[in-house]
Length: 256
Image (cartoon, rainbow, N blue to C red; front, side, top):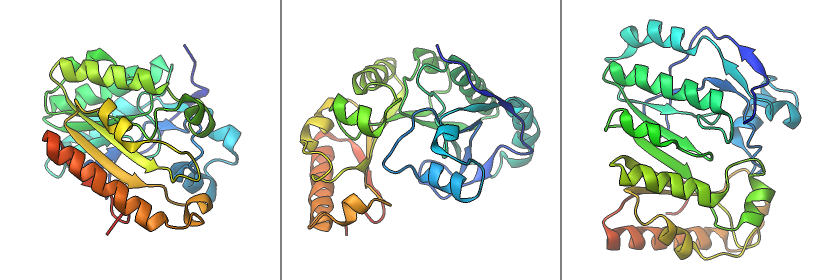
């Protein structure tokens, strides 16, 4: 197992967010060892505002050591405003092979659940079966934009292999958990030639699928016909989900 680079403290933890996963979010890790190269919006923003100086620095995760203490102080004040809390928006709560981060994530979810607060989780790591012992209202998700391991090593170089992500999600689903899959940021054919249908089939057991385009990429914007490509792909996702009774969400800006 890998060790975090160190520890930091913060003055606050829970904050309002506009993402569809929940109206509040928390980021109890600084940086992300997965090193995604879509490009990664979180890394771009942290670098832009001087919170990290380089990609190499971003790859070294620091755990927020006072996470649970902050939750103890913030939950009583905010719980009536919170619909759900998303883990995480600018990092990964189950960073691949970082047990200490996973343990803190589980402790945070347990603390939020004990106050009657639902949590949603999204990871490119491996979701542990122990999550099944927490609130049945929680929702656990993985990001899956391909099944090609060569592509993963190129674009998500230090994340969990796709097969491990899917197997862990399927295991939680079999244990009765609510599961979902984020097929975002989905790449255009000039980046990788692949069959979207095969990706959807691999996660047909899940309860919800979110689909979205790749943003902030010159490779995508330079691809002739990218708007039609995403419109057709979104239609394929919708048809697939409707035929199987899976709920879905097409991210804003993906297709009209």
